[in-house]
Image 1 (spheres, rainbow, N blue to C red):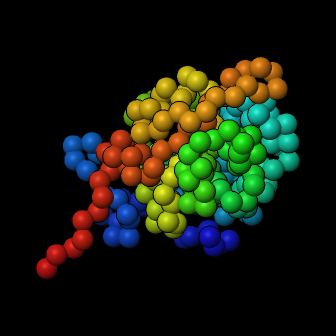
Image 2: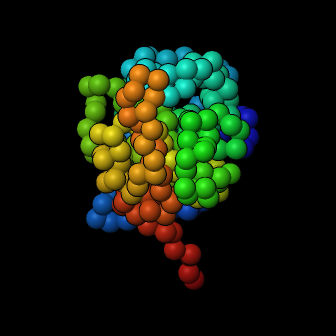
Length: 215
């Protein structure tokens, strides 16, 4: 994965390099919403305000050393920011497996059954934060759809996974994810590992396999 962030771009249904296209009638790209992959060596401050809303307690409960890895994850992962008009309203970080820093690798490595789902083509969905005043199911779906389109323009991702609460695990079933394992953190609180093939998530988000161009 390149260290330099790509130039600013809008992700649309007409993006010719996307592995998936938008499928009617479930149009996932909201009017005016745009996404950009950030260069975190110089743009970290752009999402600092949004990240103040991150539930770090849950990450620390699973991995007490989570704070020390933030810079490493920002460097290795793909951090995106979402704007509606001029307002920055959401951010997400997608983190590739294989570097030993995802929660799946650190916390669930000995208990996962679907080993292939957490291999080198698996990406952790994390740091998805939407400004409180903009939170809605529709916006969550749109952000995930844009994230997946952008990820597939730059990588050959095959699986997605995430660590979340039992409540969020039930929510993410709507987006094609299934529960893999549940463990208790340092405080005894339950945490769930979810995962899904990229194709399943794409279909759940209203994206369809792009068809080859014909004469």
